[in-house]
Image 1 (cartoon, rainbow, N blue to C red):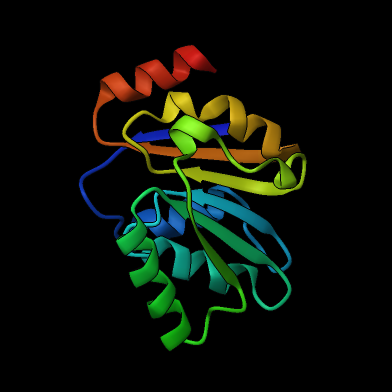
Image 2 (tube, rainbow, N blue to C red):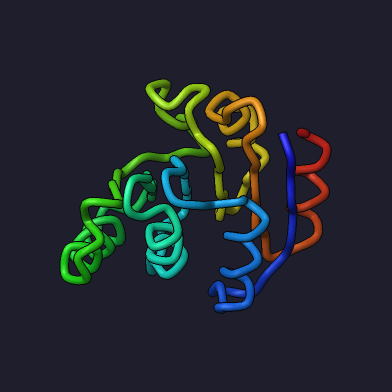
Amino acid sequence: MDLVLSHRTQILYIADISFVIMYLEVVPGCLVLESGTRSGSLTTSLARAVAPTGHVHTFDFHEQRAASARDDFERTGLSSLISVRVRDIQGEGFPNEFAGLADAVFLDLPQPWLAIPSAEKMLKQYGTLCSFSPCVEQVQRSCETL
């Protein structure tokens, strides 16, 4: 498993998104798991990168935010490439149906170290995990978990 850890502000900018997609080696046909859908800007870019045969499964614990993102993806014609689910990845982990299938996992969570064990189980042998965190303490704790 490869890993990139970074800290950031509130939103992912295009330079960050480009780096994430490049580092995760997201290409057409990839299966990507994302936790922390938020506005869906990264999700949209991931979907375009996996098109036409890949898929992005994005998870958010907040029902309204997930519904809003789902509506946005339908409006932009990306709903065939993106599945949005409500799930607390920090508390429940990723669904077991993805075990060993993900090419890449992206974490945008307040406590990403809680999701790392589950993310590791989801990744293919040479899959990549990326976690973005706003403070160095989160990065340190994630590294300790790894």
